Image 1 (cartoon, rainbow, N blue to C red):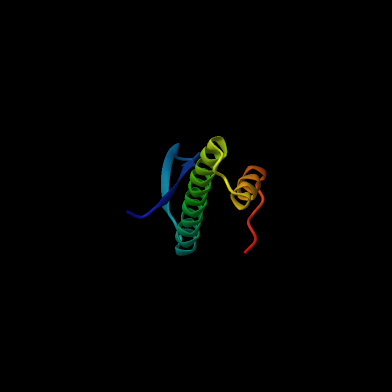
Image 2: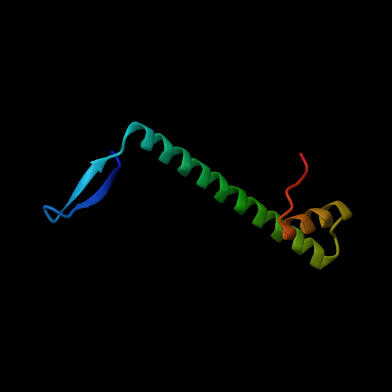
Length: 80
C-alpha cells in the first residue's frame, strides 16, 4: 500500500491524501531501516549489560568484562 501525506485544504475544508514521491519513499525506507538498526543495537547492549551485571553480582566477572560494563554504562563506544 503506497504511503501518503494527509493535508488539509482550507479552501474546500477537506483533507487530501497526497502520495509520497519516489524520493520520499526512499528516504522513509532508509529512516525506518536505521531506526530498526538502532533499536536492535540498544537491545543487544541491554542484554550484554544485564549479563555482565549478573556476573558482577556473583563475582565471576573478568577485568575485560568489567571494562565492557563500564563502557556500556558510560555510553562509550567500543574500539573497533
